[in-house]
Image (tube, rainbow, N blue to C red; front, side):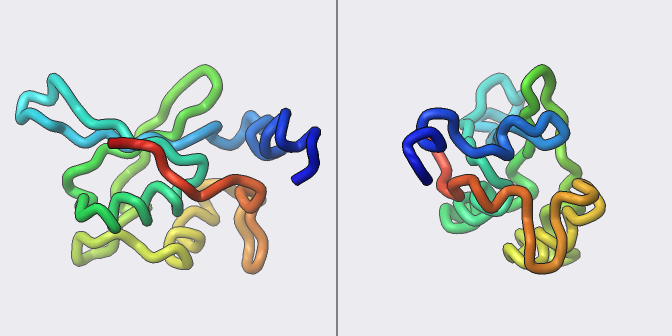
Length: 120
C-alpha cells in the first residue's frame, strides 16, 4: 500500500454498501449490562480471533458497523450445525449472498483490509 493508501485507508471502507468494521460483543454478566468488545475490519478476521481465544458462537453477538448504523448478523451465517465457527472458506461462501457482487470465487472486496482484531 502506497503513502496515499496508508493515509486514506482501504478503498473498500468508502463503499457504503459494505460494513466499515465488525464488532463482537461478549457478555461478561448474565443480565447483559456489560460486555467485552472485539473489532475487526473483516468478518473472517473477527471469527478467527474469537475461535483462537476459545469464544464460541453462542457466546457472541456479532454486528456489522456501517457509517450511520449497526446491524446484527445472524449466527447461521457464522456457525455450522455443530455450533462451531465456520472456516474462512465457509464464511466466504455463506456471505456471497449477504454481500451480492462483493464476494466471488477467487475474489473479495475485503481483500484490501487487514484481518487483525482489537479487543481484550
